[in-house]
Amino acid sequence: MVARNTDQMRAERIIRRFDKIKADRGTLDSHLQEVAERVVPRKSYVTTKRQEGSKTITFNTELFDATAVFANQDMAAGLVSHLAPANSRWFALKARDEELNKVPAVKESLARVTTLLHEELAASNFNNVISQIMIDFGWAGQACIEPKKGKKTTLNFRAYHISEFYIVEDSDGEVDTVYYKFKYTARQAKQEWGETGTLPKCVSDALSSDKEEDADKEFEFIQELKPREDFDTFPAAPTRRPIASTYVGVKDKAIVFEDGYYEMPKLTPRWHKNSNETNGRSQAMFGLPWIKLLNQVIKNWEQAVEMNLRPVTLVPDDGFIGNVYSKPGALWKYRATYANSANAIRQFPAQGNTQDAKDMIEWLVENIRKVFFNDLFVMLAEKTGTQTAFEISERLQEKHSRIVPPIGRLQTELFNGLISRCIGILGRAGKLEKILAPELLDR
Image (cartoon, rainbow, N blue to C red):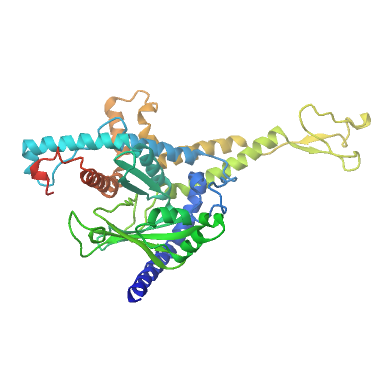
């Protein structure tokens, strides 16, 4: 009985901490919802939830321009092609100890591991998932990717929506704790933990119900990932590994399953980050005023163009019965005596200057694309006129300097952790035993 009460207290503590972290991010989530509706409509369910039982959402019907949508996609494509190209070797491994890197056997071993890792990444779904991660950087400023052992391939990857995960920093400003909130049906919960965990009472009741449809009822769960202060090195029991994983059933406030990892399984890199903030900032956040303005200008411009094409028709209020239709080919019948009089049907001229709006639209489109570094990634496709190779090189270096800080953060928070996690998975799967040099086995 004591153990059960202790577990329930732990579950309640995890839920309370999660609720606080979620509440602290409330203002940012509202901002992200506004950004998503204009930059990535298919992911615009940060604070707006899907309809019950629906797996899709309705796109923003007030979106009149897709410049930011495509600019973000172009930025993601540029990041992938420059940082993790599918058909090229984009990283090489080396030992932290520089003396080891001078040993021929170690150099050869690391080269073989590098080749193997590239092959395993290519065989997995990595290329699909990393594209989604880069898209998330553009609008949300942070992402979550989970490298894990696959069923059909050695490696498998999954990306998570910003509304599903929450992060906590340690004293060094690095993410060391991740909360993941999700839903399982009663049937899915049984499949996941029925043999190894303790199903919450609400799940057990749904499974034992006389109604078959109760097995498809959804229940909320929270996973807490955080470092253990006391742990064992490899090989270790799941509950003694460096990263603790605890699953909690929200409704019954009960511990469902406890596990552990040798590396942080869910990586949460950030694009930009202010020193006094935990969560990331995105390019779309920086450009949101322009994005909103462009959407409004396009809306007004479309209305002005339509007014020119279909101007207001002036009709005497006492000379006609019924409505006057202005569709193509329509016939307007009126008395011949009205033809040259003030009572004749005529069109009210539109007064707006659509050229000014068009000029403003072009300016906004150009600047929004710059916000997403489109000018950098398509530099070679831009017209260079009579510029020399040196001038073009200088322009490239100038533009490249704008993207250096976030790229450095991605290397630290995304790729270093991702590669380390993948090497660990390959090693525990027995893929490295024959190619690792003896000097590297204990490292």
